[in-house]
Amino acid sequence: MKKILMLAMLLGLLVSGLIVGVNAGHADDLDNVLSAYGRPDSSDSTQYDNPRPFFFTKWLVYNKQGVRFTFLLDNGRWKLFAMQDSVSLKPLTAVEVQRRFGR
Image (cartoon, rainbow, N blue to C red; front, side):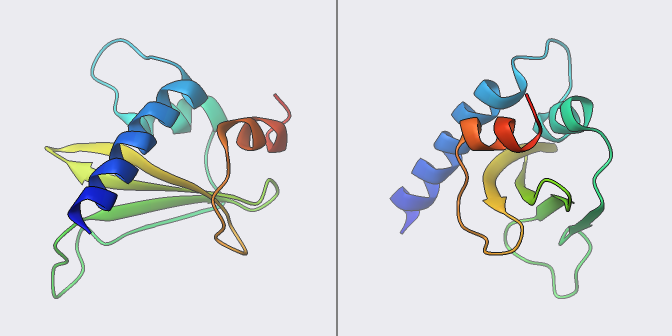
């Protein structure tokens, strides 16, 4: 299970570079997505849930495009973990996300 989670995290990091490009400076993946696609229609986080979860997650939902970005907090920086269809929650490829945003 740990190997699957690590592989998924690495894939998310790789895909985030493909989606939003490499951004110099101190921006994390969350900042990069917000810069590339603007303000989401909705967002939420488990960062302040009680009881506190083992992993903190945050997600951004863009309703018109039907895209949900999910992030994990890692050493104080949000790392892209998954891109999903916002209704079915099925995984989306970087190409599909770009297509849905008209790019």
